Amino acid sequence: MIINNIQKLKTNLNSNYLSIYLFHGVIKKRISSKSVRNYNFKHMEKKKFENYIRFLSNNGKAITLNDILKKNQKFKGHYIITFDDGFYNNYKYALPILKKYKVPHIIYLTTNYVDKNLISWIDRVDIAIDRCKRKFVYSSILKKKFVLGKKKNKIIFLNFVRNYCKSLKQTDLNKFTEILLKDLKLYSPKSSSSDLDKKLNWKNVVCMSKNNLTQFGAHSHGHNVLGHMSKSQYKKEINLSLKTLLKNTNIKTEHYSYPEGFESSFNDEIIKFLKKNKIKTGVTTLLPKQNRNSLFRLNRFFVI
Ligand SMILES: [Zn+2]
Image (tube, rainbow, N blue to C red; front, side):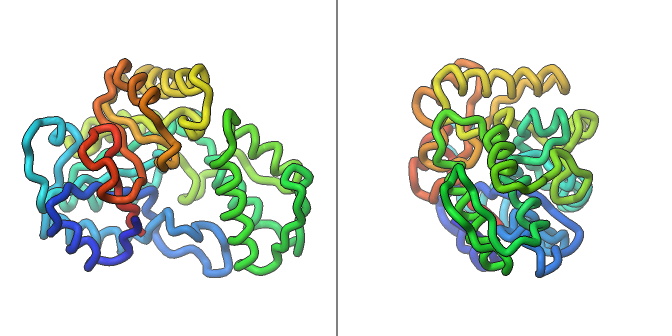
């Protein structure tokens, strides 16, 4: 469910349910309209972000995931702010605004991306297609020729790749993306210092964890779809994320965000394994009212 204006926030706050909002990044100003970067509005303009946060802080009460662990609560008017992936722009642009309005929030880190300032697999495809000047590309893996040229066609292609990759079973999507880029004869960097790609580093995370508003959770190690991995693969992925976070920051998190967060991104076995690792909540990107009462199936509204 997408929230794209203040009116929708208002309706949400007036419902009897807890509203958990999902953000990814906050940027200084809009990306050029010619570019396909940020075509899905994952990163929000600073001004717009402040409008949302100002409205929420004036009209509702921000709580944390720890607050919802207590029983028999009423959530009308309450909300939780979450960020996925661990972008450096959370620190640079979002934090000063969240501090200004004293709004607590949680940032779910994809630990290998933070560790090495890596660009996520899907952002690497976006960058390659954005830079591509060719009118067509042919993929022998996908056995298809794709029209590019215009921005509209590039977006069709990017949505196709997203859906294709997210449906793959037992595949490391970072490695697959590398193979796909070679197959398409396209280049994309692995790391970047741009506001759209730079990740927080461990020093930033430690520094932020010392303020009384920022909390950190885990969001896998390499942003692979946990529900599409074998048991040994997802166990390794979850263990690595929790260990890497602990080793670098001394944070023992109790909160997890499933990469992609759709219905097949997690299952009962994965939840059982997370519980074994002392995780107490899991957030998704499912539609509201689905599984609303489970702490491991918490729904979020994607704010753009
Ligand atoms: Zn993510």
